[in-house]
Image 1 (cartoon, rainbow, N blue to C red):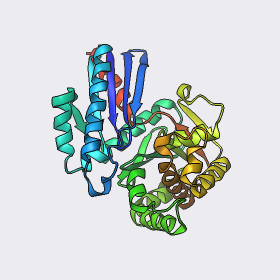
Image 2 (cartoon, rainbow, N blue to C red):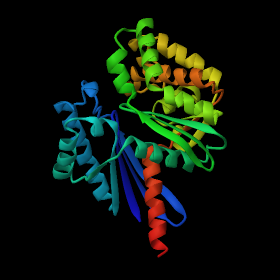
Image 3 (cartoon, rainbow, N blue to C red):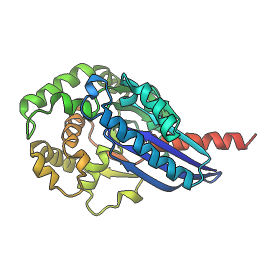
Image 4 (cartoon, rainbow, N blue to C red):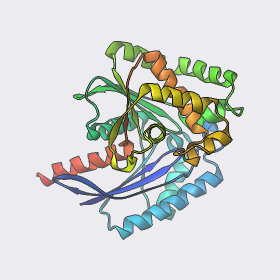
Length: 309
């Protein structure tokens, strides 16, 4: 059985196609496009006409690949930017009418559940852990152990939202950094309470910004072949200080930092630093599997269940 998952993220649209069999999941094609659906007015909960059109054109291209690969099952999952936008329903309608893609708009709770499924599939969850997935519109946290999730929540503190609200100087000023920390103090009080209760030992970063951190720290590693990796926390702290102190031009010249994340990586570093500082976590790991792989594995499990009837 051949299946496709589309992850309609706030910054990037992803397409992954895989063959599903009783033996497991074999990815045969994947691509992504920097649609930047939240560009310009994400904090006003509006998808601008330009972003709207970029998104529809991306889905038209994805539909061609899906048809070329003769996919039988397609799941297209929309998250923060579309679920919170006043014209999000208009985008869903246009996607079906113009691109032939039926979109499921999921809740933040379901988003966190899919992220956990994806991370779990890597085998990286070996102890009490805090999974963190920094999206453009929202950031998800899941406290878990190898037996399953213990607590999870989605917050509207994605990198694109924080960038547009607080990143006003080049490099980012101390005042802007303080404003972000104050905002996180207000937003993440219950996360800190949950961490005090469950005492996670390692921070597991799910794809996105954490792949960028890993690419910059593990210079010789091919992340395309890795499902997970350990990151040196001292090395991460040195890198985050460098990113936060640098100008846009200086970051743009850094190896392994893609253009889409040249500014957002600063906000992602500040958010990650805040979580590490407030929870006292001493270790970081990367999971290259995230929501889209979680959805794919859910499709696989459903097929296994159906085939056993």
